[in-house]
Amino acid sequence: MTKKYKGINTICTHVGELKDEQFKGAVSPLYMSTSYAFEDVEVKRYPRYFNTPNQVALAQKMAALEHGEAALIFGSGMAAISTAMMAFLHNGDHVVLQNTLYGGTSNLVVEEFEKFGIEYSFTEDYSPASFEKEIKDNTKVIYIETPSNPLLTITDVKAISKIAKKHGLLSMIDNTFASPVNQNPIDLGIDIVIHSATKYMGGHSDILAGTVISSEEYIDKVFQLAKNFGGSLSDYTVWLLERSLKTMGIRVKAQNENAQELAEFLDKNEDVARVYYPGLKSHPDHEVAAGQMKGFGGMLSFELKEGLDADLFQKKLKLIKSSMSLAGVESTILSPSKTSHGLLSPEEREKQGIRDGLLRFSVGIEEKEDLIEDIQQAIKAIKA
Ligand SMILES: *Cc1c(COP(=O)(O)O)cnc(C)c1O
Image (cartoon, rainbow, N blue to C red; front, side, top):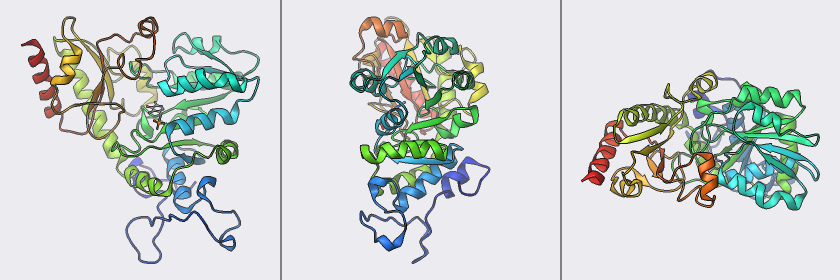
């Protein structure tokens, strides 16, 4: 890793910048070449080998952000997740997975693992005991995601790391919802950290990317598979992602602050039945969150009181957009039962606690007064 800086914003702005030796420009030059002369370097540079100048520089920033030794940048969060998992799971191995995973990750496991002879178990809930219960003789990996989507449950990361170490297993986390600004799982004992960089890292809803961060040894293992799977990110998007990361610290801190205010506002609102936000003292995992997170994040969910139409409410919002995905600078809202969790059976949704009227809110960086006003006018409109 390059030089250690104290603050996240310094890492965001400066680690992994390429110097423009030729013209002394302020930003990293972009090297789009897919072909490099052999005499240039002993390693053959090629974008699918994850070793172009821009890829290598951005990987240094990723490693620094998550306090790891090394990183790889992928073409999507799913490319990062699938490659990381498949690098450590072979025919006959078993993996223990948290029950509430990102939909794409569950699909990967349920739709693909059987054909590779990989066994899997989903936990009953997110308590450490429910993970330990699923461990078998052939278990190799424990995979978690916290805060979870859409109910923002908090898995105790240190407890999971401990269980993994006790049983000689590799621990992996999807750290997308927290972002490296709010949670650094390697410091909590996790082996491999994965992000969909499409979310807070990109932050502007215009980049699809992913990253895996770990030790040199584990990243080399992931690389051996990654170069064969071919999921690297184009240098142009690598360059854009570097630019986005410069403001990640200030963006996410603004989103934390807005989400906390909005959660408190919604919690006090008589037309709101429930609010799910780890920053609320009433959240069942608030203490665990406070112990492992530096901020509680920009994601929250809530339910309107019975009789108030959540679909109509979404339609009446003017500033807050009803849309897929999350973590952009703009606030967005969606109904999990109709979108991200629409493919689950009603019984499975019920079991996971995802009610039909639940709304998942990705809080942006707008002025909180404007967001509150938008919610107030939408509630008024549906009650009229
Ligand atoms: C979006 C997302 C992913 C998948 O990332 P893509 O960049 O869409 O492939 C994985 N995990 C979480 C938590 C996500 O939100």
